[in-house]
Length: 293
Picture (cartoon, rainbow, N blue to C red):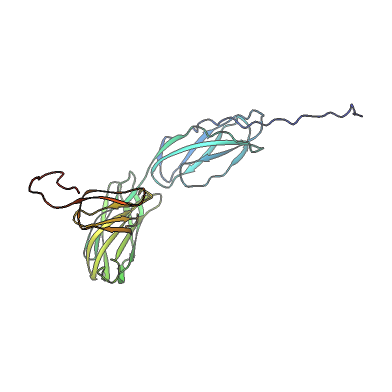
């Protein structure tokens, strides 16, 4: 028998918050300085809401809140490198029902950008440290690491530079000592990395031959986050070899032919190498396109 004093209530249906307003904040700024963005959302059920911001960098953010539905919310972030970043935000209610992401907004940050310029051998290495960014680089350090060869020593192992102005550069001398010809061991490498607070950087790896204090530079490659996350396939113009190298300049695989190359080389999906070849000069045809086999 039903008790008329007892009422049966249907469970209330919960709804996710609306998509938050596109974050409002500065479109330009400086690396190392706080930037503040404002947003809000409405929860259809009037529940308190939490917000999660994606700052377009590698930082891990957390849900912040609770806030009243419809109340404006400010959130501050600091980026440590120059660049263009996108900011977006989503919301959830107290029952973890999430909204869609908001429209993103872009912010362009100026800042120092340290890179390596001219590098020459001789009695040690002479290196150029450049600031190609928009702001001065302060308290700069340049780390020097050596690999391979026999008993390679660098002096100093770190350079200290108080200031490199925006658009400026400075030269420094590094003394090296050791033995490395690339005969019994791989050729020695010198890895140069410049750093400074709130500064984007791009290092270099220099391959050398070394006999005592005498240094001959053979080649160099960038150490940078702009590098494609993959491999490079190339065939030197006067060599019968083809190389597949990684972003550190290391040889992953190589192929050898009896012919010099003719400008093109491809790695096919089945793993075969397709390489045009230069069979030799032809008395019937001279000029562009002479290669090909």
